[in-house]
Image 1 (spheres, rainbow, N blue to C red):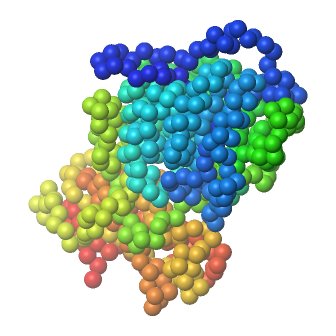
Image 2: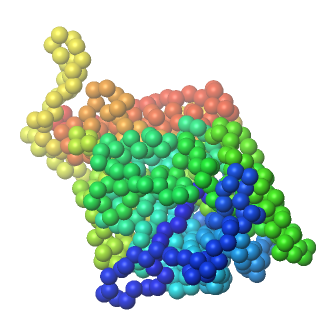
Image 3: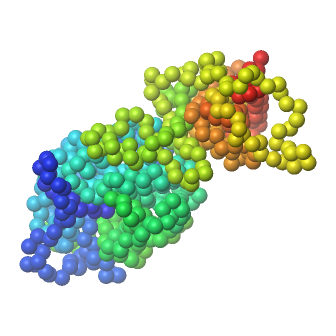
Length: 617
């Protein structure tokens, strides 16, 4: 439940043209007039006062993120066993009467519940409740937020784990990136400040976007909250996938050494930082590397009415059953007090947590899980994923600010620039699954821009990476003209009948082998200069990796294409891409059979450059 925390916001919509005034929720006179001691029922044996309640409104969600539930899916609770609206309000009333002053509505996805606006409006009537928040995936936010704000919603957290539209679609297996962006824009427009954006960081999935997220805070009133990847039932937690707070902070300080730490609020889960001159801020939720159990003030009620006193604990008590059995208020308080009294001083260490049995996060709250392997693509995309590497010359954050100032949202796949130092090229990729994408965009027969030389040079009889004394040397390409370069390479993986059938039916336990191999090929093309010592950095403008299954040979045929405009070719990028895609396929299948052969890794064609074109017969 550490994906979110409160954000202050005005509860009325400003008139057009009027400046937005940031207003924090203030205690009502009721609190000052009734300064009684905090409820003993909500105070644990270590003196922690639990004034913050999170209520899950539903287990359902309008996205299908495999990182949010086990591979085999989540059995949903029958509707009759879920809390009714009246039961939710009855429990909320009881907790607020005992001292809870902040309630956050979660899910599943809370905004798919039809009466969510009415629930917010009725919570707003509770004396003593100062903050009503919601955590959402943002898909329905733009449509519902004006009504929610009018009803009394004062805090918003929006879950967003990537700024690349096609990666978003790949992760959640649904379209909707632009709806989420529209929701963030609407929250800013209505005066919520800061708008909190929750990003779970997982190595190999989105840790390369840290700087892109931070760049958004330069011109926008956002609190970007980076959350350490946490283990829950079914998400195959792996310590190696976790990017720690200190590692993330080091990455940010390399780009912005002036990053300042902000004072920590009491009971806050976040370590907040700000870059001088930026409108927004950055926070880190360090549940795994530096827990904050000592100041924890949170309790959770699941959609089926169970009280959880610790997100990582596996003990629960059913308030629903007591309610439906006709328990009095005093009896409910005794049950609640006993559960709170049993709360431990702190949760187990990260390695112990990963071994504990706990609910999948989708059944507690929203979006805190990642799978050990990337989520599988829907089968309709398995043989048609086209992945491009795009080079953008305009700052992502400035594009976003311009679009949002104009009241618009990005309609094209914008890719955030990554500032890793002026000496490194910007190499970002975006996967396009659009049906109107041109499948021939990398065809080796496509007409190419003419080279700037007078004619092709013959193949050299000298090794170009060796100097006159036989030592290795990098070729100087500084005086070579820029030309359009395209290279295509291929590889074959002889799988054998058993592995072939499992891949064909997408039944491998590790996930979609073809999708993983495609992503591995893309990553390899981008990292070629780091893998092959004397290769130059190349600003790739396009990458495509395709895999086809050959039934006759029980094989997977891989073709990798790379394109760039520059003084040096991209055949090494294409070859590396094909080879690493083949290796990834082997890795996905090795548990089934190690009698797998990687073969026929070769350059198919290349165009551009002084030495002319090459096409394998």
